[in-house]
Length: 482
Image (cartoon, rainbow, N blue to C red; front, side):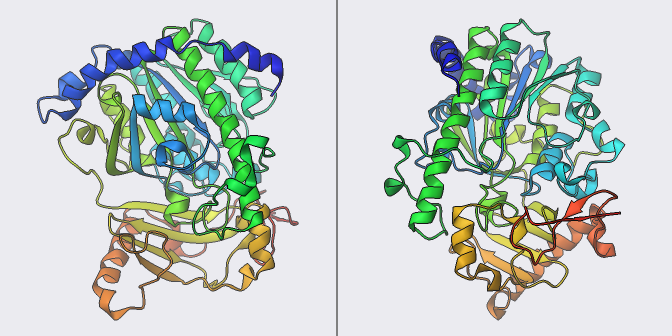
């Protein structure tokens, strides 16, 4: 990050942020906690005119300080303390393009057609892009949309439907942040939807700084605490610090421009960090995501939401908040009733899936408050190593025989007593009724969403590239579909 850029952005005042917090908390508490009749009170008079800042990262999971991890993210921490932190937020797919496409269309990947990675030749069909939320907001509420930085759902970003796509030299924080700041300083047309996408914390990581001494960091569970994983985590610290700096500069610019009080900030990521058993896996370490929202009314006050929510629920939530009729294709539910204190839960189950990442690895998961059920398709009983990004921790696992570990075709986990999902109960007769119930939930969901796996293996499209699952690295030679 160049010093000139540091000097330019580091002097921004936080006075606007404090004023926002002071002004928002009083109105939020009463509206958020009152049942039933609080509906109108929780919606600001300018609800249809709220600006929306969707600021997202790559491969961050819940590895941020608002979720209790000892990582350097003070700006994300402050955002959570001023907004609402969703402790039980999950993606619809723990892979990059499918996760983002699901949030932005309100449909699971096998419904919107995003079955793999854009950079490997996968895209949604035209109707998938027609379902993108920026098109609905423009059509129904007059929003002007701008994309700055990473999007990862289309080979040509003009396909998506943004009114303006800002040219940037790259998608890293140092390249994206100045453009986002200049946009906010330019007195943008309102109401706006602004997407700010950062490449961080995707691998390769930034190198650890002296503050990230690997001797004193702790790798995430269930990775063993060894020098390789500690150094990997130290490098992650350096990378997430850079991400947090970018978030802080964008939020400071929002406040300096006088836009914070009428802007809903959505801060999230696509899936878990790029470590073994996390990214591209259906454990909570892959499905679980950072999600913080800050804005007027119920989105202020430093609250914590324990309800189980999906990325699919964000689109219908915005429709309710902005008083827009939800499109018929939406598969999620608005969580506004939870925020208004009318109910504790909107979902009794959350679903997630993998189709293609670097390799084809079809699998599905259903999660309730207590149980997780994962089903693998295709009969493979060993890890698909190309679906884990290369890094120090992966190398340590590979060296110690990761390729020979067994993978169960069916798995059932008790999330109360086994939160790391290591004790598979699928073959335990004492849990047969639970297994049958979770199987039924998954089968019903797959049928109701016309999951293509019900008809057999899912083919990759013409021109797509994928690795042999017996390879080691996503960088190994890939097959191109003719």
